[in-house]
Image (cartoon, rainbow, N blue to C red; front, top):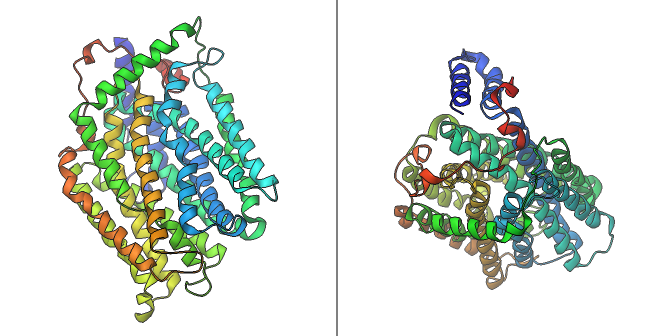
Amino acid sequence: MVEEENIEEACRKAVEEDDGPKGVCYCFWGPIYWFKMLAVEMHWSFVFGVVSIYGINQGLGGALSRIGTEYYMKDVQRVQPSEAQVYSGITSIPWIIKPIWGLLTDVVPIMGYRRRPYFILSGMLGLVSMLFISLHSKLQLVCAILALTAGNLAGAVADVTVDACVAQNSISHPSRAADMQSLCTLSYSFGGLLGFSISGVFIHLIGPKGVFGLLTLPAALISLVGILLSEPQVSNFAYNEVNQKFHDAAKSMWTTLKGPDVWRPCLYMYISTTVSLNINEGLFYWYTDSKEGPSFSKEAVGYIFSMGAIGSFLGALLYQNVLKNRSLRDMLFWTQLLFGLAGMLDLMLVQRMNLRFGIPDYLFIVIGEAVSQMIYRLKWMPLLVLCSKLCPSGIEGTFFALLMSIGNLGDLSSSWGGGLLLHVLNVTRIKFEDLWLAILIRNILRVSPLCLLFLVPKGDPNAFMLSTKDEAETSEPDNIELASLIHSVDDKF
């Protein structure tokens, strides 16, 4: 063990001391060198898994799914914006209960494998659910919601396994925690940029149901990851001990969650997400309205969201290269404040103030979307790094899923709260008189978490390490990362 650790340390130093690209060449060779460095230190399969799940399935597929679902609810199911907001929250429930999927993949192997069957089954579930929506011409609303929920379930199960890999490597390579979160975010942002850029065109050409048919391809990729994954088989697994393992994992999570270093930032994460009410459905209906709104085409809507993906991408780059070592409280203070101020651009747009300054609607909303998404990404990046450091050894995947589900629960509360606000203000498919008031209320609530910054640590999130009294007794975790990650160092070359 000591010899292997020495070899790994020598490999790490060799990569760091290698003459990386300098000057103008860095623009082209820099990302390649960065990927090479991560592949050497964490193994190429980790990088492949992150890019496949975050970039293609969640980024590209998520962008197509979002725009497709927006138009599917509006034009096919013809629901009100407040109702669409509630249904959006319902279909996201599988992401809220991610710890359950984390426990299953960590504790219950299938046919002797902990990872491969869950990848294969989740990919098949996503493929069938997307085909079900795309092939039915007159699908009832309840069935459509169930199918969309099943698609999200497939994505959540695949996501929790990759999260386990990120959490495990963040603990074993603490100096690369920010790099790994940047890899996840950059993959997601790049995939989202591509997906949003082509979404409007595909919606126009083949309609929302045709887009759901295309989503079978990212779902099939999840199964392919499971098929190609090299994972050691668990022999003589004691299934009669599963209940005890669940009990031990739940006890360990609860013990960790009770610590003030954990529950305080979790509480901040939930509150800051919840109070930022999600009224995106109301804005979307206004964007496409021919009387009250600017009546953007399907292609224009896709390009607008692609600018948001560019903003998110730039935010990840800015954090990775400039801000990753900044104080957590300082980062959250400025990003939360700027996030509230950026929301005022929506208010100016709905009030048509941009036209008074001679700024076209499309240009103004593109700028606003890019700025808002960049700030939102800068707000979440340090919290993601912190969450990866809060995971106790042995249940990294499950506990990281628990932390992320807290944020997803905040998203659900925000979505339902926004739907309630739109309903109270009587914002419908054709009535938008009080949409400006909903935006103003949302913006004021966005800055309210500033008074709760005392809940988060003061220092650099990269330097934070969770300490427990049982740390010395903790054994190495079993099979919580991609199997090829635990091969010997000799297998890496």
